Amino acid sequence: MLSRPPEAPLKDVEHPDARAMAREAVLAVLVGVAAAAIPIAVFEAVRFVAEVLYVRVPHAFGFGGDDRWWILAVLTTAGVVVGSIVWLAPGHGGRDSATAGLIGPPIPLSALPSLLAAMVLALGAGVSLSPENVLISVNAALAVWIVARLRPAFASERVIVLATAATIGVQFGTPIAAPLAYLELTGRRVRGNLWDVVFTPLVAAGAGAVTMAVLRRPVLTIDVPGSWSTTLPDVLGGAASPRPPRWSCSARCTGTGPCTGCSTASATRC
Image (cartoon, rainbow, N blue to C red; front, side, top):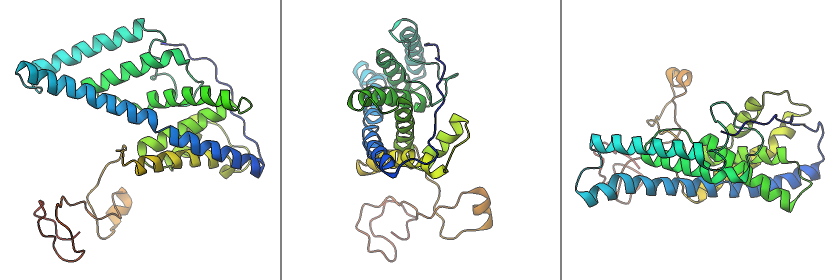
C-alpha cells in the first residue's frame, strides 16, 4: 500500500465573496455530474464479472453456479489475484483504506488501474466489501488532475472536498450526508459561517444525486415497509416512511380501489 503523506490543513475563508462562491458552485455542479461516471462504469464491470463467474462459466461446463465447491474456488482464486495486484501492480492498490480516511491527498494516477482492478474483481467474485473509499479516491484523483489543467489556480484541497461530496451523493442518492460527512471526517472547527463552508459540497452532492436519479441508476438505499400513519415507535425508531408501499403491479392502476392484474395479492391501492 502507498504510504499516506501528511495532509495539509483545509482552510476556510470566513466571508467568501458571493462571486467566488458562484464560480465554485458551477465547478461543483460539473464535478457532481461527472462523479457518476466512475461508479456507473465500475458497477457495470462488477455485474459483468459476476455473470461470467457464476453464470456463464458454470453453464458452459454443466454445473451450478451456486455449488459450494465452485464458490470456494472462485473466492480463493479472487483472493490470490487481488493480493497479487496489491503486491505487484504499480500503485499497489492505492492507500490502505483501513488506515486512511475518506478525505485525504489525491493518490497518483498510476495507482488507479490496480485499485479499480482489485475492487472490480473482489466485488464481482462476491466479496462484500464497501466500495465507498475506493470510488472516492478514484474520483478525487481524477478531479484534481483535470481541474489542475483547466483551472490551475483552484486549490486542490477544495477539489478533493467537492469530489468526495459528489461521490457520496452519487452512491447514496441524497446530498444531505455529504457535507455532514465532510465536516465529521475532517475533524476540524469551521471558521466563519457554516453555510459558506458546506454550500459547494452540498451543490456537488446534489448534482451527483440528481444525475443518478435522471439516469435511473441504483443507489445504496434500503426500502422499509410503507406506513400510512406515524406512531411514537416510528418516531423513536426512525422507521416511518412517507412513501407508500411499492406493489409489484403489471396493470394500469386507476388510483382508487384495488388494482386489477397485480401480481401481489396484498396490493390494495396504487
